[in-house]
Image (cartoon, rainbow, N blue to C red; front, side, top):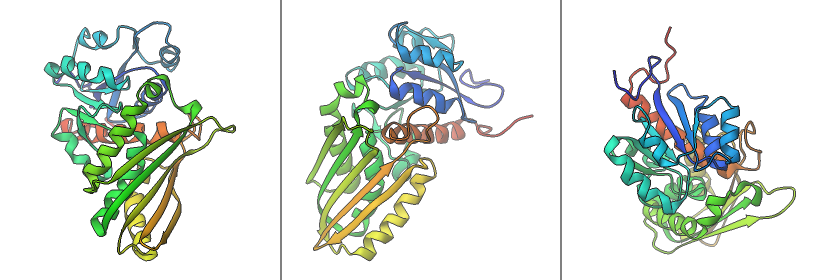
Amino acid sequence: MDTARRRDGRLSAAVLGAGLIGVDLAAKIGRSRSLDCRLVVARGDDTPGLRHAARLGLPTASGGVRSLLDAPEPFGVVFDATNAASHAEHAELLRPLGTKLVDLTPSKAGHMVVPTVNGTDVLEHGDISMISCGGQASIPVLHALARQHRIDYVEVVTTAASLSVGRSTRLNLDEYVETTQDAVREFTGVENVKAILNVSPARPPATFRVAMSVLGAGLTRESVRAVLATATAPVRAFAGGFEVTASVVEDGRALIAVEVTSSGDRIPRYAGNLDIINSAALYVAEAYAAARVPTAGTVLS
């Protein structure tokens, strides 16, 4: 039997990083019928997120990536929720084990995936980049618009509450902006792209929001609404708090805003930035598990 499997058919998974993203992701994996969270890893025993994971009943370790390498069996999927600077090293160390690596840092090292656009690519690449929360919220809409219209300029402004932005994300603000810009270019074919990230200290905390400004040809209220209806429904299938809150079209310019609220069980509702990237990562990992383990997601007697 494949050592990455269990008798119940689930694929083994580990979370590398126990910050805000890593702990929420571990909780989500804990509810999965396709994945079995066997380890949550941090770099020190005093990490608050590691203690929280232990309270959830999850196995934990404090040796960083070495804890994964020293495990008795390789993991089927490893989610990297550390930082962009460390991801390349993690990918190099884990590659010989044949582990599927899902990168939640803005490192750009792996193959960029947006579930509703190219989600099946997870089957073909060993290192999968989830880009950024702003990328996951904006690209489904922008990709669909670019397929229907000639787009000349795109601006993406992401606003996230300060309380929902962890230490690793704060260390990677430049990488976040660059990776989001590159991903929008990649998925739309538009060269003139600008991404902006606002970390809001407002109280009460601001709900995660992404505002998109698009200049192009043939943009009408009807055409943009049709695109939004087609592009957003599939995202809500795995990120139920994803919602279009504004759509204004005038003189060849479209202004579109989306907000994402979390499910509210392990993270506050305003932290949709954590919810959408983790939900997207879980979605593609479960698709990989289903392809690798035919019984993944089924209930066995």
